[in-house]
Image 1 (cartoon, one colour):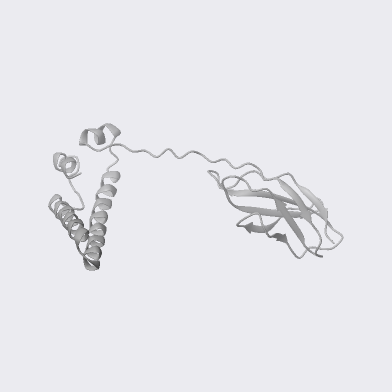
Image 2: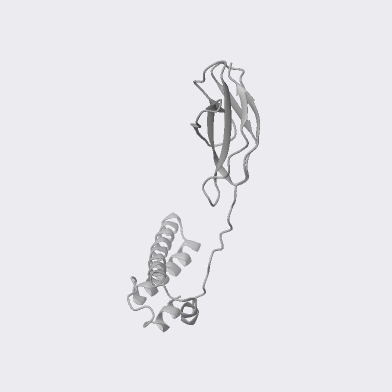
Length: 180
């Protein structure tokens, strides 16, 4: 890294860490590694400190270089590699409600299959053909219970996954059951 920075002073004119300081941090880290290899707990702590100091400096330099908005060609000419992270899009599918449970009066339990990539589940219900009401977001497919319902009323329930590339997946098919 120091060679790349030293050869490209014009490309990186305002480094947040000087080359002299970076070289000193790198040397201190190397010395701390050698001491920790044969030393005791104090040497191990010194190694951790030297490592952290070097990492902070490198992150400052990386942030500075990224802020320059250089082209890939400029970066490659500087001696650095261009790394891009291809984040694949995760598209959630609609969950499958496998059942509703009305065994407890004024409540409906919701059973569903987990969706790959979902971090949580958003549940809504409606009375008959009325408007949808948020029942909440659950962190998993277990213990989803809609409470404070009116006995003798037929409720529709739908669920969607939370997460993926679009934050929410599509709604499930509606399943209905009368509350007891």
